[in-house]
Image 1 (cartoon, rainbow, N blue to C red):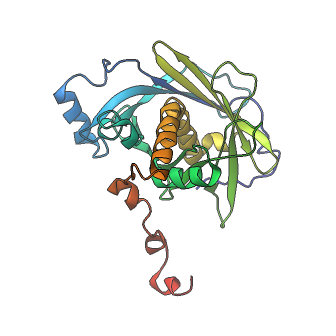
Image 2 (spheres, rainbow, N blue to C red; image 1 turned 90 degrees about the vertical axis):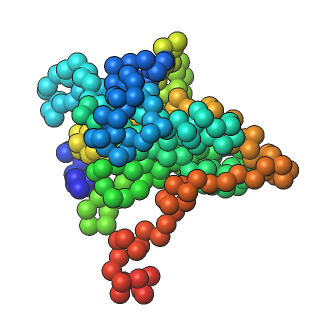
Amino acid sequence: MIELSKNKNERKVGPIYRVFSQDLYSTGFHGEEIGYRQDEMWRSKSRQFSRDADIVGEIMETKRTDEKEKLTSLEKIGFIILRQSLWSEVDDLDKRLVVKLFSNSGGWIASMEEMLAEEYASSFASDEPLIAFTVITKDTEIITWVKQFRRGGLSTENYAFYILGPKNTFEAFRIEGARATLGDDFNIIRLNGHETVASIDSKFGDFGGEFSVKIKDPVLAENEWFCRVLQCFSIMIAYRGKIREKINKGFHLWKKDKKNPTLHRYEISLLANPRKLTLKLDELEEV
C-alpha cells in the first residue's frame, strides 16, 4: 500500500501528473469485440469477462513522475465492459449498472457495481434520488463505497469516498460538481488541507462520451486504488441521469405499494460480513 501521509512538500499539489481518459463508444462495432469467437477469447483470459459483457469503451493513459517532464500523448491501455443482462436487457426500473475495466491483454482491473438498497435508503432519508455504488479493484481486497450526499439546495452534486493508508490511517475525499462549466465536470477535494487533488472533465456528443480524469497530487497519481475509483466514477457520469430517473420513479411506486424492488444476489454478496475475512477467530469475540 502506497504511503499517503507524506509531508506537505512531497504532497504538494501542482501540475497534472497522470491522466486517464475513458472514451465511451456510440455503437457496439469496434475492434476489441467482433463476433462470438472474440468474446470467447476474452473470457478465456479472465472469468470477469461475463457472457453478457458488451465492450462499450476504451481506456487511455499518460503519466509523468516529475513536474519537469512533459506529458506524452495518450496511449490505449485497456477497455470497458457493461453487463448487458443487468442494464440493457431488463425493464427500466430493474436496471443495475455494473461496469468493468480490463487491460489491453484482457486482464481484469476493476469493477463498479450500483448498490440499489443503499440508493433507496438514502433517497428515502433525503427525499430525493441519490446514487451509491461500490468499486472493487485488483489492487486491494477492500471494497470502496462511493455515495452521493445532499448538502443543501444551492450546492452542486456531491459524493464521498475514502481509501486506507498504512498504520490504520485513511484519507477522505469529496467529489464535487464544478460550477460554471459547460459539461458535467467534477473536482476531487482532499479533506486534509482541503485541496483539489484531481478533476474530471466530461465531453458529451453524438459519438458517445469522453471522461478525462486528471490527477495533480504526485502521491495519489501513483496510487492505483485512488485512480481506479475515479476512473469508475467518470464512467458512471454517463449513466447517472437514467439511474436517477429509475430511483425517483421506483421510490414513489414503492411508497404507494405498487412495486417492491428486489436485489440481485451479487449485490447481496457484497453486504456479507467482511470481518470473517479480515479478523482472526479470537478477534471476532472482541468486536
